[in-house]
Length: 354
Figure 1: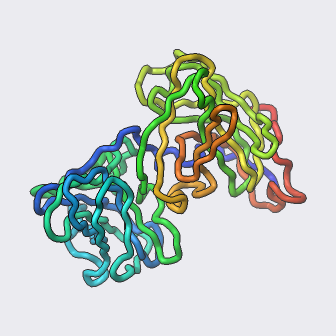
Figure 2: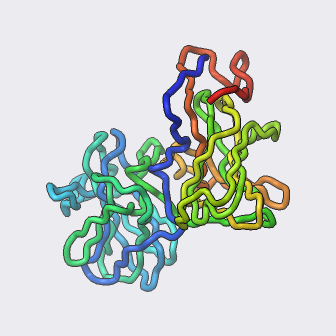
Figure 3: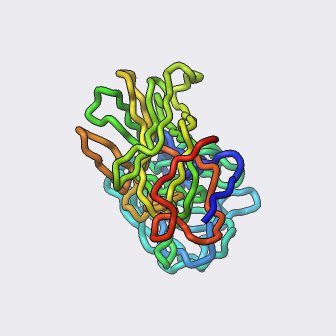
């Protein structure tokens, strides 16, 4: 095994596709004919068996129909349900939450097929909202849309929806974002919760050179990034932020280099956390999913989830992910060996030089 440079550092997990706000927006369906959609692509070839969406609120409960349709030349749903009219499911939401169901007939797709997930009432009109997140990174070809009297593209947001294939795999981000909720947590050095971040393991050995996070009030106060080895509890790397070096935006990104790079092994659990060092609140955004399996829609999948240190003890939540990121600049070249097992590299090795 040998680590080779990839040039400038990249973030793991992927930063752009899983970005979320701390307060999602909603489309209101309360009039006959109103609907909303996610215009996207089939992320891989296979058979879609299930579709789901996040309901924000329910005032008057009525049955919803969620279908997979094509996309017309104008980039909006074409009004034709795929699979001979059978690529849809129905359910009746009674409260806010994630709702999913099996398609009447599974739909076979090829990677790159333009598709849209369309949400509408299947009969009588009710009054409810469907969640979308307006902070996610906008793309030119994946976006949500809202229909009142005509379709309107919303290029700065994504419908909180997802698909599942018949092999149990999820439709992956950025094509689908099956968030249940998005929010943020702010803490200081006097909070019961003193450290927040992610617990994760990697599919290959890498070299880490820094850390980052996204949050409301992310850079308000001074803090440290700490990278832990879970098994030993050892701190492998740190980075220190002193308050003031920021643009003053309420939702901010932090980027800091570690004092020394560190090599990390494959299939070994680590924690990357923010630790406030003053009484000023430091925040980090997070998202929840309805079940741990939905984490597979995001990079690192179920091998990355929330961790907090509360009243001196670690608490892990497999259905939540804080927006913390490891910055890496070297990766295994695939020449053999590999980390984490007999004959592999040690659990962590600190290296000099950036």
